[in-house]
Length: 361
Ligand code: NAD
Ligand code: DAU
Image (cartoon, rainbow, N blue to C red):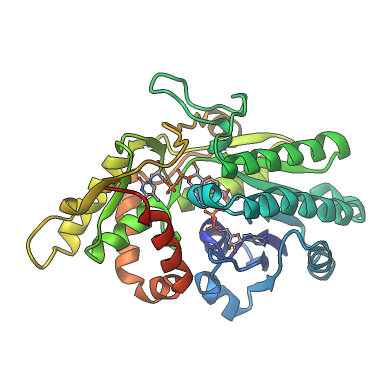
């Protein structure tokens, strides 16, 4: 049994799918999963419905900051490891409302660490030696790169620039301290931008796909020349599995796709794909919907990951190119209308109205 926090979100949900598909591919018995998730606006049980129905996965709806609930879940399910995805994850929301980010990413991670450490301290022999706590973090903790800076390595100094990245940096430091001080068996991964199925449509790629299909403006922040290093979500999930199996306790592994792309190029790639697969009724191109809007405050210019360590020490490298990954992603959004309808609730519409109302074109 393994425990996954945030397993009803984008990456956590993909991880649940990957966990079972990987076991099947390797001919291993499926190891059950307990998902501990608060089910915020970003958490959706429909993402993992097949595994909940089959009984391979169990959902515990709880806040990671609720120590009684975390303690009870650990005592009940006795996991052999914890993979910690749960977080508030959207930079724009952290700018308009940082409080939840401090609550979940810092206080929540602290609570989870405390309860996991108490649980681990009570384990004996093999079970204690084999226990792992893997903390899923982000490249944003390293700050922003200029066009000539070297990519982020594990020794790059922390320089978080948004309330989101500052709260993730705080959580990384806590995880590091729990290993250093208490010998708690931690592993940390700092990954670049993910994309793929089940991505909540507040983030760049799914927002652009769904706005385009609705004939709505495609809001590109600033000059559109900010760069992100895009990784297909299943490649990230596989990296986490391999770090769990082969990682050295207390170590940090940067995970990235060596796929640096300017935002405007991501958006035009999506537009061209949609022109091919779902041409507009009036014959115009989706690119005609692109609208440059007011920039994100403090917008980081460039992220890039140097994945040398995980490639060398773990033997992981991504299976997807951006071309193959974006094809799968666009195809998934074209087919998944039911899932899309469940996430585009009233709360989603309120967020879109709030975030884009004051961004003049
Ligand atoms: P997401 O916002 O899609 O999902 C977050 C999940 O956590 C949701 O299911 C939500 O309900 C749950 N959650 C939020 N607060 C909670 C709380 N207090 N208690 C329990 N559950 C709670 O996020 P994501 O994009 O899947 O990111 C997952 C993790 O990966 C985060 O830690 C994020 O910082 C990290 N990360 C994300 C990316 C990316 O590109 N999305 C890249 C690198 C690292
Ligand atoms: O780098 C990893 C991080 O990637 C994760 O830690 C975060 O959880 C995840 O949200 C993501 O952060 P970004 O801020 O890079 O992702 P987002 O999809 O919000 O934006 C990607 C880029 O696109 C960024 O430069 C801002 C820009 N953008 C975004 C939106 C939502 C736009 O131009 N228009 C938009 O409407």
